[in-house]
Image (cartoon, rainbow, N blue to C red):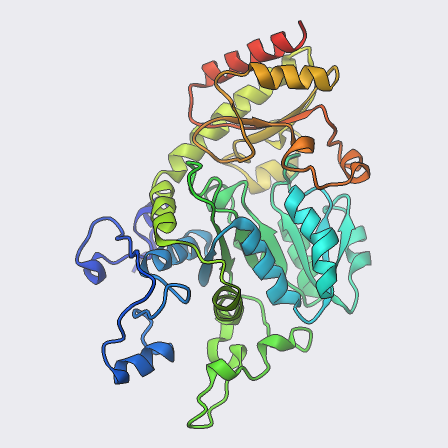
Length: 432
């Protein structure tokens, strides 16, 4: 059977109407628990032998499961686990890889909460991070790899600079060292970039953003490529005997590797982290994300086109010092290689003047909304050093060119001429 393409999968993947009373739209299973029918069936359900039956919505829910299966197909993975936020997706992934302690390599120019967690929180659990200013400095990355290194973590498109990670090369370096490449692909979504096609092993998303696309749900998802061999002394948690996977009555014993094979990672996220730590995605939220996914291609095509026009307007504006949008860098080979459809609808720019000019600009926008999110159908503006990246120390911000004059834009679905006009008048007011 011919495999369907992206624009078919975004509408149909993971859902068979005949399993849901032939409902054309995915039903919302708004329930905490599910009847077990009888003791014989119950034993099979709790043992995981009936994959289409459920017992408790923290362990699994039919609405959420459609979203997970759809994301796995869209991303090209073997399976996915949906969680309550993008930060939960990142946290569960890092813990699952390095819960026995170790080190992870990451760039310093990433989302503020991610950097804060990596710098100040994970080290309390024995997981330390080695940071590089430029993740595409491959010699620097290789130099940091040691016996305790458990993974390389990157943002495919950095927040907010939009710098592009060379995934093919980073995957080659990671795999030569016997470690996985973890990619936060939130900015592009699977529509603009599928990291698994470039060697990535695990993708994480804040599906709050472009995947949902309407700013009405906080959510996250982890997707497993299924290509990394977790049966390694470096990752003993996957090959050790897991009590909940065996059968105490028969004496059968299983590990995540022996039971799940190439899906060991994602099943461990589900069974150990989601089930026990409990950052569950609600069924109503999953339903709203599924609605958003149905229009992802049209949304992102329009947002990329608008972002490109706005970036060019900003480049020509005399009050703008610098524009951060790799999508207009015609001499950047990584744009052509990884993003033939565009790098996304997020860009940043550095305003001349001082913080008073920045404040006046923000206070005078009329179409743009001043709020800390991206990937909404509405166009958004924030000053990252005071909002989304406030957790980052000044020294690190300065290294990355992220100063108080930088403004981040998330371009929505409004008329692009109205957006350009709004920025034009706001910039003019900022310098009166």
